[in-house]
Image (cartoon, rainbow, N blue to C red; front, side):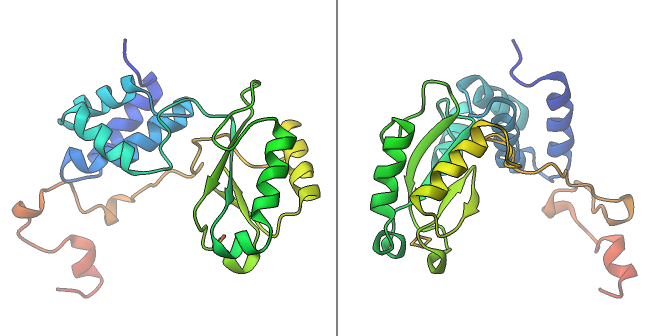
Length: 202
Ligand code: FES
């Protein structure tokens, strides 16, 4: 049985067509797989390997390198509390304890209703806004325990515009025909793309 839905299989081909070499589409296809399922299954990695002409071991190697790709089911909302220095100094430890108690799971766990996964995370590059966290990689700044409770309530009641885990963007890349440089492998390129010469380049 195929992993990608018919619609996503078409999209996968479109994504592959954007690159001179199919293997370059591996990461976008992993994102597509995660968007479809919420996490990256073994079946998804096998199919991606077939699509881009490599081994599933190579796809696994790439997938496992990036923390944002999940290889087991996670909640609809993945909450990452930053535990690095600035946030730690500003109360991240207490916030994590509060979150564990509020959600009834330890860091790394998911709630039985499948709504939340709680994780500790390294610096989220928002150190001046400590303590901070991310929900599905969307930042929340200077979070107090009360604000955490409100956040969880809003998410549980769908009173939030944060999309479910795996959804990176609702905007798909579209390259207009006059900007498209083609899918010629770099070694076969003999002249500059049309748009460059039109822009006055070499
Ligand atoms: S230490 Fe938490 S965002 Fe940098």
